[in-house]
Length: 148
Image (tube, rainbow, N blue to C red):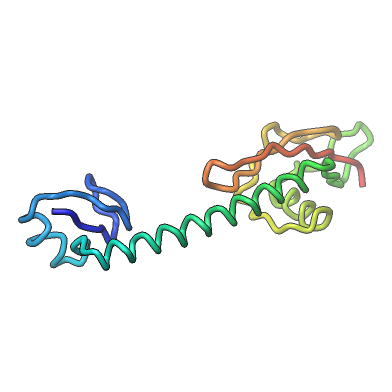
């Protein structure tokens, strides 16, 4: 029997997925617990529409991520830090500071939890960080630490 899963079912499939299971498993377990619905023509049509909407949403999101990547890679960020006489900075540069610099210099709001600094930043100079947008999309961003 073919059913459309409403929720993720372990060892079977994810939400909005068409799967084939034995009749008893579908009728006695999946359908009564509202984990699946029978794959009738109308339900299949609804599934197809949901998949189209999800695909369109995903394409729109990927286009937006590509545009943001392009803006971020255009010029390196400049992050000001208080320094001593030897060029060492007080403290270090954090993802929060990089997120604020992106907001001020590029005009985009990026969550600090998505920003990962690749090297420890303790001196003035150029460094790299990685921004993970999710869905396998990420960008390596150059930033420069300058004295305030």
